[in-house]
Length: 141
Image 1 (cartoon, rainbow, N blue to C red):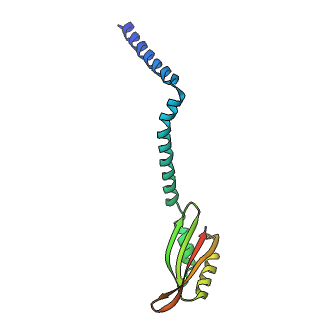
Image 2: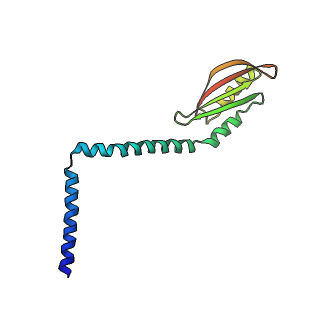
Image 3: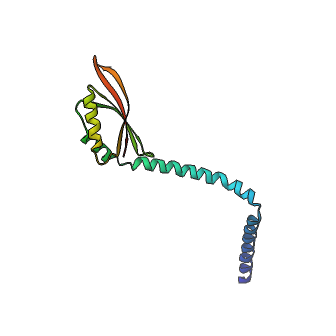
């Protein structure tokens, strides 16, 4: 009886090895094309996951603290758009005087967390019947 079991195991091992040899002997181009799609999909999926992780692990609290320390009473933030890949913030704000806008930019430049503050655009707007300056900043951290 043990000889019979041994023979069946050997036959199964032989079939398994034969299958492996046939797989190895298959044309390389066929294997590459069949493997390319899953690899490409996995790479795209990993890239998306890494991007999401990068967004999650942004130094949000440090960035918000730096913005709060630079706060100016007469400057109102309209929008904050982070770009994690470029380590950049885009801020849209409005001020009723150019002096307040410049003071805000100066305070932002004084924050250790923020590396480079650039005024990218200004526009004269009317807010509640008063003339104001809407402006955009690009800030590297």
